[in-house]
Every structure is written in structure tokens, then in C-alpha cells.
Amino acid sequence: MMLGESLYPLVEQLEPEMAAKVTGMLLEMDQTEVLHLLESPESLRAKVEEAMEVLKIAPQRQANSTANQLASLVLSE
Picture 1 (tube, rainbow, N blue to C red):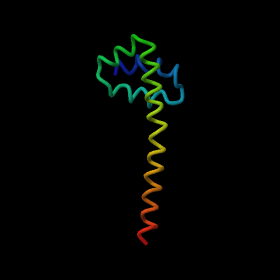
Picture 2 (cartoon, one colour):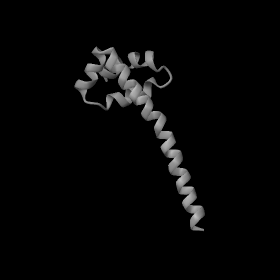
Picture 3 (cartoon, rainbow, N blue to C red):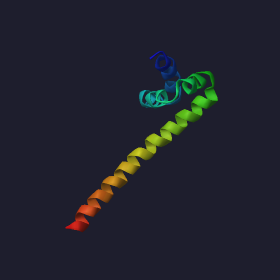
């Protein structure tokens, strides 16, 4: 919890709209890695960018999966 309280304001500076989600993602990392992010602005920036890419890709994958499911339903009729 203390790590999250320290990490959130730093993430919020980089990604204000997604700070809570990105912070949660980063807190799933190993504790020593999170501590490193608190000490290294460059590393934090890189991990936040990586998390944002994952968040951008996830909806696309879900949309593709849904479209594929619908197409298989239509084709099976």
C-alpha cells in the first residue's frame, strides 16, 4: 500500500487519466522492481509507456476476438 501511495503521484504526472490503472499494473511487478521505478524517473517513464501500450492493445484484441466470434456464428448458420 505504501508503494502505491508513493508511486501513484509519479504515474499521475505522466498519465493523469489512467494513473490508477497503470499504478495497479506496476504494483503487480516484483517489489524490488517497483522500488527501482521510484528511484529512476527514466525507468518509470519506460514502464508507464509500456503499460499504456498494453492498455491500447487490449481493447483491439477484444474487439477482434468478438468480431471473430460473431463471424463464426454467422458462418455456422
